[in-house]
Image (cartoon, rainbow over all chains, first blue to last red):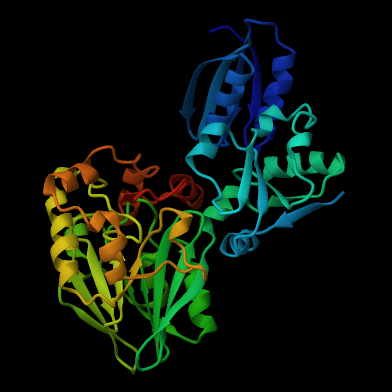
Length: 75
Length: 375
């Protein structure tokens, strides 16, 4: 996967992971992919819902050593 | 305008007093629909916080100015942000301290009755999750039944009434919440009782609780009589306290009955459940006050916040006790069941001592309502 930008939101509590994600996404072009790292478990449902409502596509997510990783393609 | 803080205790008071409150819940829609703060006169607006990052202009007209407004999120952070935005726009609002995480952990002690020769029985209402636990007190001694993992609340309460916890019971192996029983027993030196049929896989020592066991509390000898009532789990046990109170565990609730499927054996246990509810309970005195381990809906709370009803009243009013046809009963408790409680397998393993999640993981596992009942 061709990742354009990575957002490191590890250790940050809600709402910061989405605030940072949204800011980074604003700088991307449609079709580019953003990778997000967070340790906030609530981010899973929130990022999924946020991506959907913003017209973006959640390509995949995985968990590795308590770090949640998301890949979202800008819509 | 100011941003105020509202605690879970204050919100609980509003629930019990049936006060009006406007709740702006800024969690995502899935989490909101799964589980929210319930109150008879509460109004709701659910807009996820991530829809409000650019401003609250779109919702400001929907926020009332003639009633109290509470902004709620999962852990507090987002509700503070939204509350500040509303405040900047001229509104007076509060946010829920600690969010739904703290709401889930709030316990409200309510005295539910006096015992014959002195002593009393308290119900600890876990209002956000619907779990009920009990403290029986007699002459400086206390017994705990179905304690939650918020163990300090029971320890502090016992100390405040100068009682020593000497016995700790779980009516069954819980699947919806993490038991505090073992921790409390370790901290106080109390005896920890479990039904042996539910405890075959536990990794710690316990005292096996058997049908007909009598445990006495205090010098005024309050009798706790164990009554084997399988069905929700194979070991499920009820207690009769002082010949006045029936602690029914997850077998019988006020407006619903226990579900037999959380240990994976619905078809096998449905017969036990029926036998317990329709034969064993039928043989008990109708004036026993039923004190269950859960409530499912806020309507099950009495005016004083307690959850209690006479057994005789439940025999006439509880639908689950009035199904003549055995097949119909079997269908009710095995088909179209509500979703299982969040992380119920991991919760069972935690209660067996097989896994030891940290406090954050425990909170995460317990998110949501209890869902131990069928109606």
